[in-house]
Image 1 (tube, one colour):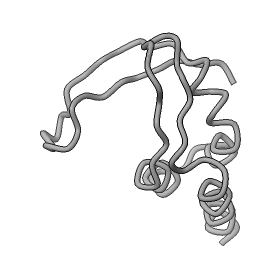
Image 2: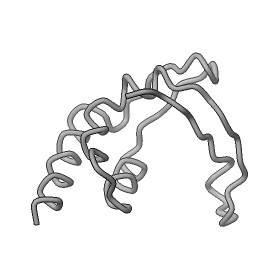
Image 3: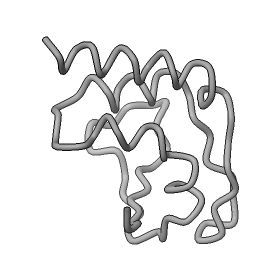
Image 4: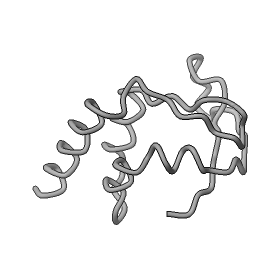
Length: 90
């Protein structure tokens, strides 16, 4: 039950501070945009220790992340052009 409360609080925080904003990432020389759909997907998917806590630091993490892989969407979704995978120390 506590996990659901943490997810809900993180989503509420993201709606006020993160969603519909972007940060410039030097590694890809482009902005990274934070959508509600993307944040909700990240929060609702399988949980790992401290995963929800990452939401609160996501702007700094995205800004400093280093691109390590560019992949096609393996599910073939037309609205997803490519998958970018980054590395960042937290």
